[in-house]
Length: 356
Image 1 (cartoon, rainbow, N blue to C red):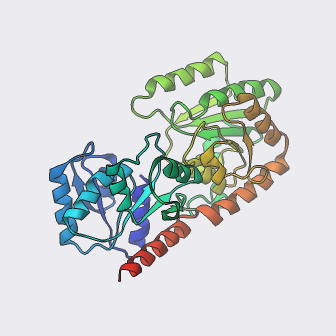
Image 2: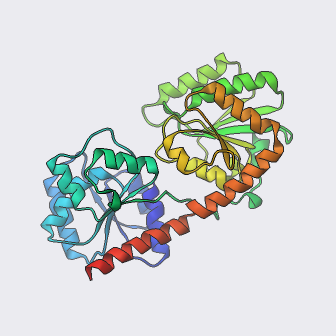
Image 3: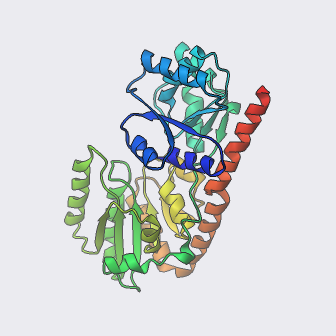
């Protein structure tokens, strides 16, 4: 879905954008609702001669300046299409997810050599690209995903509406996490910490926001059963919420216990809302949170350490406030969508100028 955010940012700047996407996919439906110019294609898997020819005709018949994809698998379509169209226009890739597959064989080298630049959303992704592909490090640019910091404005959003919805008292401290119900997101560690902290404090509420993705309902059921086993009467499962800024405003402390993360967009959103956080010291997180300044980092998968770091914030309102102020500033300085788009456009223009 971040692709749609990027497209909207470019359209705001009067840049013509056309979107190639999988037909009948969620991004197809959402882009259509937004009125984005679309070219839906049928392409599941890697080799699609007919679709490749269709794309080559599309490229040949339109005066595009740039092709930019958000998924490396799309290179199997785009690179042959550009070749058939006899087009030399710059091709970019944003790498959102790491890979355990080594891609240094002849065919992958052909694909990746056609790329002008690769944007990696974190240092972890950049390192993964260097390890698994033949791409030169100088052609990889670290560029995080951005958020609209004008949407996440703590001084303009009242968290009491959500707190009242769940009967949370003003004086109670709300510790929340926002993630889909998926193995590796750290729900187990969060629940154990909630159980242990509830033995020491009588003024805590724990809020878990999110729902299972398709095929992960069993995991979601196991997490809810674990909460029952721990007898967490002060725990709230909110399900999916479309009012993320308001939900974050209702929290006093944000927990991000993910075991492994390429990036953490919900963490950035929480930081923009001035929320102090406790985060796992996972690779993708290290580009976002700063230990002792915006957050406390804990040893990944170590529930006892998570509990200890949460306790530090529970016990110190001053630290919560200081971390929150620092977090908001860091989110604006490093992850604002307008600044990220500025950087992308500069790279686009530099590459186009090289060819002129």
